[in-house]
Image (cartoon, rainbow, N blue to C red; front, side):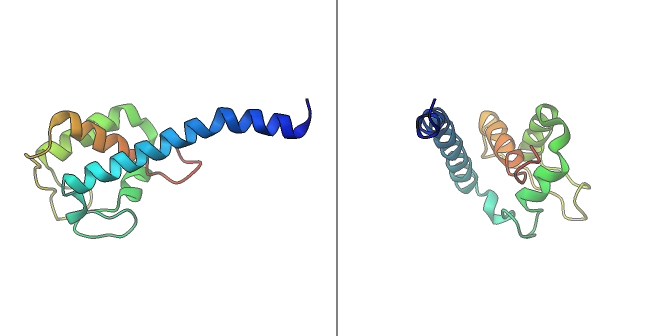
Length: 114
């Protein structure tokens, strides 16, 4: 197979997956905005709470477990993991959305770290 044909075949297979990942990232960011997460968190900068990138980097080891742990923390709040300022409960967030948010936050790890 010639190189241009191979590249075309690969692009046809990879581009839909890339588009789906970008759609999921955009949906996660939109949910975080609608859930008012950006009031305390930023992608890379420390605000009241830690940045999403730091959370994803710290908890990347066991994503399936940490999704549940973070979703619970989103719903119920908590403290002690990132300093003295506790995370407040987010009673306006539905449990299913908390799990989506946790998955999205954990997806923020830098390339090659997932």
